[in-house]
Image 1 (cartoon, rainbow, N blue to C red):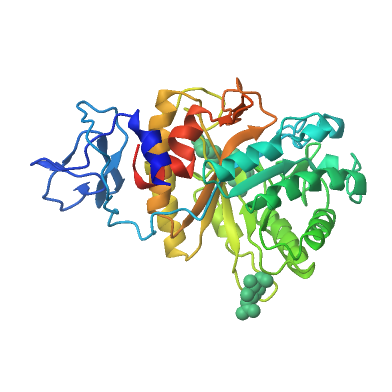
Image 2 (spheres, rainbow, N blue to C red):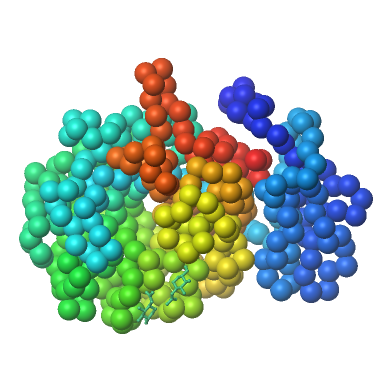
Length: 417
Ligand SMILES: *[C@@H]1O[C@H](CO)[C@@H](O)[C@H](O)[C@H]1NC(C)=O
Ligand SMILES: *[C@@H]1O[C@H](CO)[C@@H](O)[C@H](O)[C@H]1NC(C)=O
Ligand SMILES: *[C@@H]1O[C@H](CO)[C@@H](O)[C@H](O)[C@H]1NC(C)=O
């Protein structure tokens, strides 16, 4: 609503979107092979090369001069992008059921901590309602350890009582009207053993997904996040075969219309999805009818110096090295991706770079379906990447990064920040 938006931006210094002579306006071209026009950008935006042929003024540089005139009412879309400037899915990870999981795929089932007050966790249900109703989010990713679901038995069947607890969170998500991503948070492993490559068999992995998919087969707003952050998987083609068996199992369980998210190697890095061979291998995964409909690549990217998501300061908007080249590959190959983990500290540098990343993704929404921030749920508000809102009894207060960049109501998708 207008009043809410004005209230949000009134205390915020806005930079003018109007070009002065000799400077390109926000979102306009400012360089590239053969370019003879303006090569500097208006204050508050920075000339960013997207490829050899095209540089563009992207908002967000610390402004050298500012005006406090009203917000621009229109934003020119960048000509390079063919997206409609609005991301289909925006959301937050609601963590807790994955607590106790480590990068080597060891998860202690008893350390899983449901982010629901009925299980003595945080109020994940209230958080999701707030995120939808006040911030305009429409997607939640719900990480869970494989060990929790099978009660620590490798390759074992799902323990009904444990799935029922996890389903409480899934239902709380669905009840908000949002899309809900089921995320098995095991790094392609079970206790160091890689799925299909010495660890659990592909049949065991497919059986897990078959059981989950049959439970949610008629629920259109479920997405199946096959695996969180595979890494150091030696044979990427064998991994693609593991993913193929899961896709087949999900479709054969009757979940024929939902999105399935396919994860690559190197912690699902968006930057190395193509270069380290994940794109070529996962591109071959198909539905049982041979199509690739609703098979979406799952990529992660953090904004700190080593892409680890462990530092409070951000050093990159990831556009040059990750999002722009990946967008080219996706367009060429007629595929799409979703960014199910991204985040940064609640700091000025992260506000700057994250808002740029969000604006870029929105401008390229033909290939980028959306993002899911990391993370809320059971994270404490002093966790370096916390997106956990606080409730003082009269309502919720968001973390800085959610308020300024991630929440659809922030305006960051339109470059209004
Ligand atoms: C990159 O891919 C190679 C081979 O596919 C694999 O051995 C290596 O572990 C991958 N790197 C990371 C960091 O996942
Ligand atoms: C092929 O299967 C996918 C996944 O179940 C489905 O979304 C798509 O509509 C199917 N295509 C045809 C032509 O039946
Ligand atoms: C993994 O990704 C990071 C950045 O996302 C990159 O620096 C590193 O070189 C990648 N490793 C491989 C083997 O591609």
